[in-house]
Image (cartoon, rainbow over all chains, first blue to last red; front, side, top):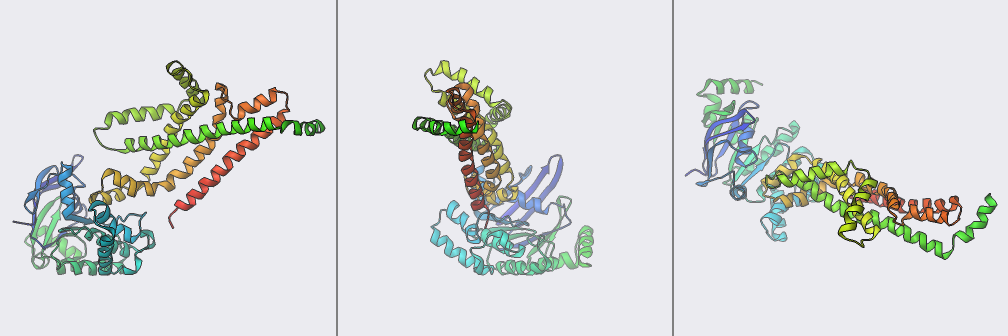
Length: 245
Length: 226
């Protein structure tokens, strides 16, 4: 049984079909990267998975259980096991770093405050943000905010982590600090779906890479195959264009 | 002329007149604060209902929109008379002050709900998405994320509205509520100089609205992010 299974999922925005019959699966602890041009549906797929955009067809299974995106209870159960990190961090602007990381454990998962703060301190240390507990998001750089956002996403102990172009909004100098943070997470058994344009990073950390175009998956293969010997012409064109830069 | 005025001053500021003015000032303050506080609470509720996307609330939402859009367009004086003629037969014996206060509630609810709504809308949708993916309930999103970030946008116009309303309550004098304006008129009718009568009223209005605007400025400063 796959940890995460996406079967024939489609999604439309108005009349436009932005996801077309996507099928993809991930085993426990796998790191799957989605690559492809802008507008190919990568981010939409993540939004569908976490229940922000409704699918119009298809099924999603987590740990063998089917997710019913029309049911609030089912989506809540899903989000107990799955977290997402956004391109624009989306940290709560009215809360400190510490509050951002502990709010969900305390208010949603009803953990004791002391316990939640203890694990938040560990998480913030892991992402290298130990000295900023009391800072507000707007006082931090983009890279720092993104590392806090990763800590916040991990604070609910997700089995599956979705990363949506987490370095795209950052200054080039800040990209590596965030990539280092993610790299350190890849061997912790968390299943990850990563949307990224950082091809060297994708190649290094992914167990498999999915090439997407025009709302559909073109091919899924090991990173070595995708980058060195893609089966599909579309993949070859995309990869050669990106790598030649 | 000035001499006569000065002669009149000690007569004007007698105990009876001072109590009379203070009571009138109390009524003006009561109408403004009680009316606008209830109006703010109700306006907040209406704004939240109007924002919700729940299909269950759709009919209620239509009523809310109709209410807000109607009452923002009716002059306060007209609302006063409507409330008077509706309440009087239904609940005979209701005080004029009570009727005026209900009118303030009706009008301020409509205006303040629009102010609150623009505050709620100022919070970027990404903030809400972040909260949704962390399993916040609708109420938690509102109380923990949206409202704390909207006060900054809500407070200045809301305070301006309340300060403005201190003055608008003078229309209640048309109903016979002895608030500041009516009190001034009565003092003049009793033979006191209009300069003294309305001059005292003017000072009272200032004493009411100035501290209110200072308090609003203080709140605004405190709620601004560090």
